[in-house]
Length: 226
Image (cartoon, rainbow, N blue to C red; front, side, top):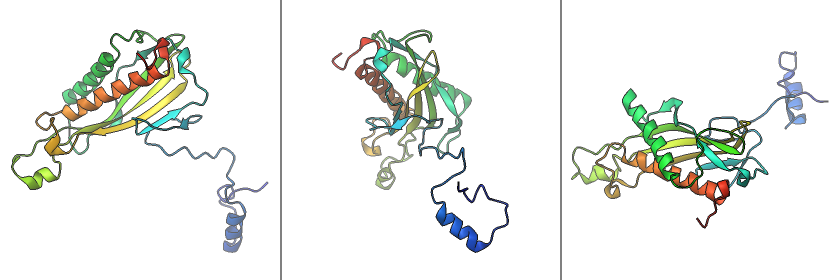
């Protein structure tokens, strides 16, 4: 059985022999070598397949998973990625706590009256684990009459996040999504005079998309016709 040049590293080899060996074993790796799928999702995606993303920037699903067999979902508190991408800003601890709280609020509001939410993980329950990876506040320019500034869309905010959907009992990762969302061009941006308007719009959008995804997949007996 051929070994890759990495396996033979350290053994004396002539340059010609190495080149021949590289050609001969193209595509052959050492036992245990693994190249993870390219993704902006931070975490282990082994066993999942990338699917049509829909509203998400990326979506990964475990083949054969049937979410309709789950009776509900537990919403874990949103957490901040480490390191948290502040897009050049330096947010205070209270700013970061505010973002976490507002992300949690958006998720809870999206699931109100659906009957899907379970207070604690258990058999037949999904666990949704949201992570806010980064955020950028809206920053209005000093002079809004300067069309050169406006043309550069100064002040547009946004955020990036990822979400893991697991079997709450086993911890198995069933669905993983990565998403990024930014505000509209500055002159049309109604959030331009608020600090976190575009970020909060992203929270509400993601929360709504998660609820609709679970409804389409029949979680808790929900349906798209709801």
